[in-house]
Length: 94
Image 1 (cartoon, rainbow, N blue to C red):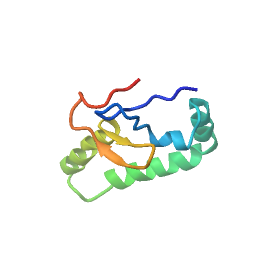
Image 2 (tube, rainbow, N blue to C red; image 1 turned 135 degrees about the vertical axis):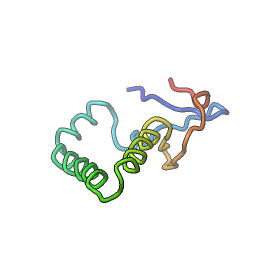
Image 3 (cartoon, one colour; image 1 turned 90 degrees about the horizontal axis):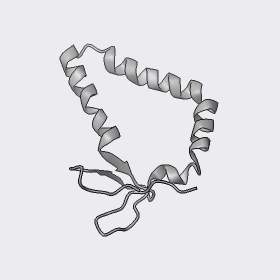
Image 4 (cartoon, rainbow, N blue to C red; image 1 turned 135 degrees about the horizontal axis):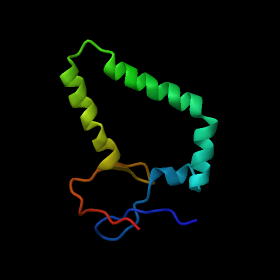
């Protein structure tokens, strides 16, 4: 099965770390189903710690709004390196 890949500016495959853990999207689904309770509990715990605090609500919202950068602009490469894309022109996805 072909995995989506990211390439550096020289055309070298960077890949994704999840390729080391899963061979297909089916395996990801099976993992989530098998570990749903664990994933739910720790996701909720993260949410509750973030929002049930004495820090001012505006500051919590500021922090939470920046978390989307982790999802949208970062990559955890197949060989375990973490990076942040500064612009949307870098990296080609197939």
